[in-house]
Length: 332
Ligand code: SF4
Image 1 (cartoon, rainbow, N blue to C red):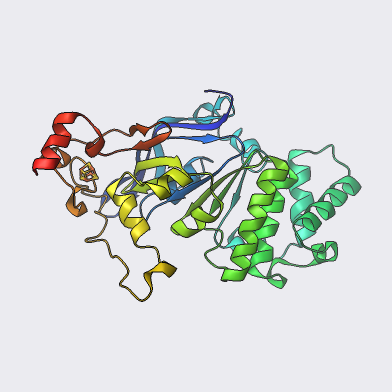
Image 2 (image 1 turned 180 degrees about the vertical axis):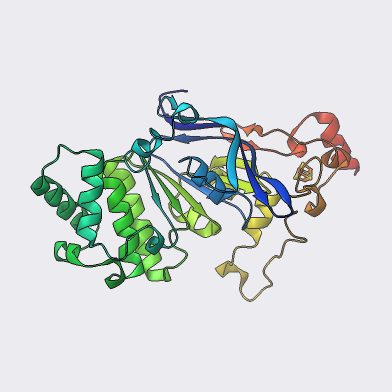
């Protein structure tokens, strides 16, 4: 693992048991998260992006379990840590912000207690006064007046609760924040402010952020790089400017064409044909082939690996493989 990579995910598979049978909700996914970047993870509902986010904290319980892979976080393989060791990593080193913070905040506990309790759990030597001062400074940095620390979660707006979740991660100087659909429940004005805040925190604290969203427009706003998932697999990864200017994978091309655009000027918005496959019976080969306008013979037979197409720009697509395949596409 090179110095600038904070989290290296290798061949990760997460199995999910449903009544109808087991599915691989994340299937053999590899991805690097670089120190100090905002990495946007996008894809349609059910593609596995939230399952991947939880797996990075080994948060799976019940029907989900990691069946394969390595999770190298800051030099340690988290898969080798015991269940008793993991809580020290969660919260202290990796913070998580969910779509609905009410599910993570205790409704009968004041915001101040959330913060001081978190600090004392991971740093028992910190005095009560020092923990309080840290909590006050943090929330003020995030634009919440310190008096509001005495309020309960339900007394705050959705945007404020999201900021409280971030302050919990910052209270322990977490190295990575995983934000799962953090703006979905916010209106556009609050969303814009929240995205600005993420950018500021990234710069000020050198924070690394994995931003999971179905909204590719949000990724365009704040991310440095983008990773695109389709049907439990990673299909494209690259610098956000490169991917938006020249998307390589036909699925990413379709996603970008489906984004509402002011230049459309009343024209029809593009709609991708078909729907993502059931993970109970995923198609053989490239999982996108039943919907792909460029599908070739090989696409339904063999799965292309995720390889560099240009420098740092990776795509899993036969269109960018050997000359014979390209020839088939041209003749096709
Ligand atoms: Fe389309 Fe084939 Fe590329 Fe899959 S591998 S995206 S089916 S061209």
